[in-house]
Image (cartoon, rainbow over all chains, first blue to last red; front, side, top):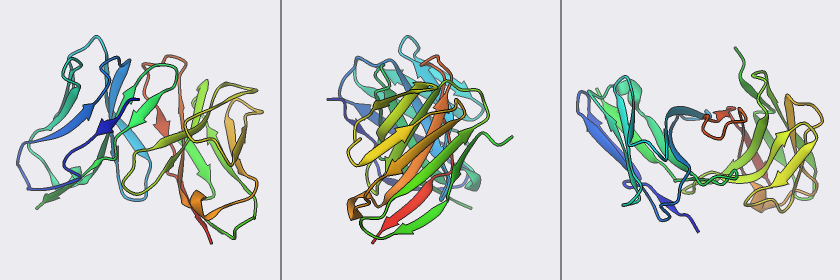
Length: 111
Length: 113
């Protein structure tokens, strides 16, 4: 059974710092991996989707990498800003609508 | 630019009561999903639909029913609410291609007393 873990559960950094959020999964037979952002009281917003054949995706200050063999993905945020404060979730797509979500990392960027 | 709209946003029920959560999307998506989010846990799939008139069970379907009579709407019903169903419920939709991202509504916060 696929399990998705995100460590740490919470992270606080000063503004301007580059940071990495981690996501690990137990079954390497995945279809894709997505990173989402969730603001308090809101739904999830898709940030990046990496297909199983890809190694990374980039969007602005965000870069997500995927290493299926080691069961790991990272989300790199460059030059963090207070507006980046949110919960970041990764979700592993196993095909057949089997998307397994991690519990998320709550990020706080201090001004 | 509505996207995915969920109603209501908040609701408090007593044990044994029934209710229906409504999800509407205006992006002409084929696929729609209902998830629940509980503290410290990832989102879990309750039911999903691959098109009008079709529904299927997800990971945690017990105690819930769904219907998709129109392509743009996906309804989640609780026939006899239980305290264990206290949660935040999210609806999502996506295109037919499984490598397209899911678009989420803002959620319904449901408390069962």
